[in-house]
Image (cartoon, rainbow, N blue to C red; front, top):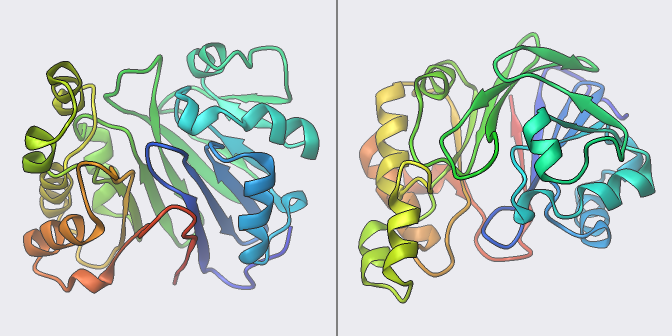
Length: 260
C-alpha cells in the first residue's frame, strides 16, 4: 500500500446515493473500502482517477447488506483477493457467510486493520445489523455514517471529536412530502429506521459542537433533495459557508479530500 507520507488521511468518495455507495479511506500505509455498491469495473476506473490501484486496498468494510452498499463486494473480493469485513448479521444477510475471505467484527468492539483503528457503531436503519464506522489513526478521527433514521448517542459522541464527518443528508422534508413517492415509502424514509433528513443532519452536527471538522454530506436523494438545498440547510444551522461543505454533485462525480 502506498503511504500518504505523513499523518494526513485521504478520503475518496466514489459513489454516494440510492444507486451505489463506495468510499475509500487511505491512512498512512492502510487503505479501506467502505461499502462496495459499484461494479468492479467502475470501482477500478474511479479509483484510478484518484491514483489508487485495487491491489492497494486492504479490506472492504460493509455498513449493511442493502444492495447499493454490498452488491459487488463478493466480486471485488474474489478478483482482487481482498477480505470483506462485517458483523455476523450483515455477512449472513449479504449471503457472504463462509464464502469469501472474511473479517468478522462485533459492534462497539474496536479492531484494527493495518495501522488503522476501527469501531463499528450501531445505527437505526431497516437492515439486519447496520453500522457506521469510526476510523482512527494516532492523530486523526473520521466518522462515516450513512443510512440512519436517527442519530444515536454513540454516533453523536463520535461526531464531537471527529476531524472528518461523512454524514447522511438524504432528503429535504418538504420535497419528500410533496414529491412522487407513495405514502408508505414516505413514512418509511422519515421513520427512525429510515433516512436522515437535511434538517436531522444539521441538527446532529449543531449539537455535536465541533467547529474544526470537515463535513461531507452523504446519500443525497436525486428525487427529494439537491446538493444546494442540503448544503445550505446544514450551513445555516452551523453558521458557515456552504462552499465549505462537500457532497457528490452528480452520479459519476468522484470527490477526493485530504484530512490534515
